[in-house]
Each structure stands twice: as C-alpha cells, then as structure tokens.
Image 1 (cartoon, rainbow, N blue to C red):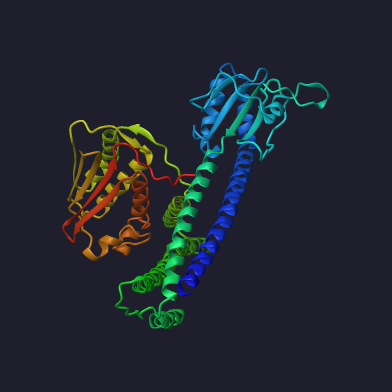
Image 2: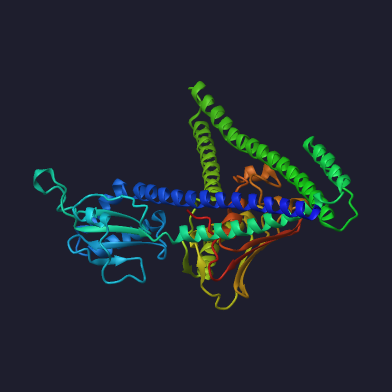
Length: 496
C-alpha cells in the first residue's frame, strides 16, 4: 500500500508541475508576442513620425541622387529602427511601381509582396496597421518629394514618390519562444525530479532533519543566517540540507553586498553633492564680493571673474562626466566602430601633450612596435582614454620627471603602456582607483581640476571594446597603466 500511495503522490505532483508549466508557457509565449509586437509598432511610429526625419527624406527625394541620399539618411536611423539585416529589414520602394530601389536585406528578390500597408502607403497614407494572423509585422511610410508636396488639388494627399517599408519576420519572437519552450521543458524535468525526491523523502522517517531545516528557516526569517544544518546522510535529504546551507551562505553574502552597495550609493550621493557644492560656494562667494564692493579694483575683479568661470567649467565637466557614466549605465551610449590606426592615434595624443610635458621639464618618450596593425573600435573614445591616462601621468609626475609610452601587439590584442616616475599610488588604493569620485590625493586632484570620474569613464570605454586596463604602481616611485584592446572589435552589446 505504501508503494501505491507513493506512486499516487508522485503522479499528482508530476501532474501539478506539468499543468503549471503548461499555463506558464502559454502566458509567457503570448506575453512575449504581445510585447514584441507593441514594441515594434511604437518604436516605428516614434522614429518615423519625427518631423526632421520626414523633412530630410522629402528633401532627399527631390534631389538628383535621391535613392542614394535617402539610403544614407535611413542608415543613420537604422539603429533606432532596429534594422539588423536579418529579422528586420527596410526597403525603399518606387512610389508608382513598388519596385525595390534599395534594401538592407541581403537576400531580397527583385520585387516584394504588396501588403495592405504598402498599398496604403502607395496612395499617400502612413500605414501602421497590425495583423496578428500574419507571420510578420510591417509599416509603410510614403515619401513625397519636397518639390511635389502640397501640389495636389482638393486637399488630397499627394501620391508617394517613394515608400519606406520596414518588415520584421518575427524571427526574434520565434527564437525567444523556442528558448522559453526549452526552459519550460527543463523546468518541468527539474520539477519532476524534485517531486520524486520530495515523495521519497516524505515516505521515510526523516522528521528530524526536516525539523532542523524548519528551525533554521525560522532563524533565517529573523535575520540569522549563521545557523547550519548538520546532516550526516548522503541521500537526498543530506543534499537538500547542504543546499540549504549553501543558500543561507549565499543570502548572507548577498545581504552583505547589498549593504556595501547602499554604502557606495550614499558615498556617491555625498560625493556628487560635495563636488557640486564646492564650486557653487566659490562662485557665490566671489560673485557676492563683486556685487557688494563697487569700488573693487579692476584687476581683482578680473581675477574673481576668472575664478567664477573656472569653477563653472569645473561644474560643467562634472555634470558632463556624470551624464556620460549615466548613459553607460543605461545602455544608451553607443560606440562608432571603425577601422583605424592606433599608431596614428598614439602619435596624435603624444603631439597634443608634448608641449605641456616640455614646459614642465619632463622627459617625454613614445616608443612603438614596428607596424602595429589597424584595430577596430571607436577612435574618438579610445583617444579619450589615452588622453586621460597620459594627462594623469603628467599631473602626478613632479616637474623634471619621465613619462614613457609604449605601443605593441600581444596575440590578438594591442596594448599601450604608460609609465611615469610620479608620486605613485598606495597599494591599498589601486583596487579603488576606478571607483567613481575616488581619488587618492583629493586636495591635489581638485587643485589640478580632476573630477575623480576620468578613470571610471576610461574603464567603461575599454571594457565595452572587449579590452582591459591594468595598473601597477609603487608609492613615490611611479605608475604603469596598461590598456589592452582587441584588434578585432568585441564590443559589448550595451548599445541602444
């Protein structure tokens, strides 16, 4: 009888798991489809109704090389439109024959099927109609050449010179649904295994370990995660007890990380407040002095105004750096990837800083490996990183020091190493130099105009290129910063 009861319990548990997972699968698939469809049409309408884009397309449509200019213009907005050349493509159609003039689809045929939205666009109507029964989503927007717009009588919409047609074959949704289905199947299998294990555990007299877990769970609910369950058995209950102990340790670790994150958040807010309050105080003080003393000497007034301008520039730099980091955090910062010569960039940065290094009496050297290969990346951002690191070396190296820049390759990476004979970084501070607003010598950094955000931005840029920054330093002896970059771009998919 015990076996029959065990079998019934196992069957009931498995059936419940199967039903629950089926319901979850249905709702998830429907939710993904609805979300993706709504997101597609809202995204398309948000971009394609921009007045500037429509105006520029109309101007381009009236030019001699209309197709080329419109293709270039559409290319600028391909990221916002989600054009990927695979699941989602655009077509530039002739407004009369609906012939394909340009497209992002590498497998496009000579003609395209005329959908209801294309038919509406051909008569001058913006078409965003949705048909849930179709295996695609599409929008079609008529483009009227600027020299023909508004020329039709009776207030009718002028005929389209061209039609911008965007179609999504729902491959992304299908892939997501396939992954969801796979996850649900895995979850069902895991649920089956857990159900069988639970029934086997219940069928035995293992009340003592269960009571121990109950007491430990109650203590966890009270915030005590130090209690461990001692179960010597190696069966499923023993594994469950070990898993429970691991979970308690992970939760305890997670709480510690949350506390640390909260401390960092408070430090960040305090730092932002302090960094903005300091220049604001200076600006107010000098401004009040000028305002309250009408007979102040002109030279002194000019000095005060220079201080106000410098402090304003400092505040602007802080805000700009914060905005850039915010864009990185939100995934809205994009990289313009291109092939460029890292050797030329190093020489340009070197030339830009050489005069200042000479003024301070530094020995400033640039040594490059023979024929450093061209790399793929965002040239402006990479030069920003190099400029920031070399400028830091210049700031924190006493006059008459030495700064060496080396450029070479190592495997499939290019590395740039900047060595200086500056004041160095204490060992305990090296791990935190990339933290936002963290500065080893706060007074000297403020004096030199630093915000404490430069290395954080540099780290974000290099990481998004698939590279890394390493720092070695000895206090009062110098610092070596190595920037590693892949020759072929491995850009993190953070972009919008």
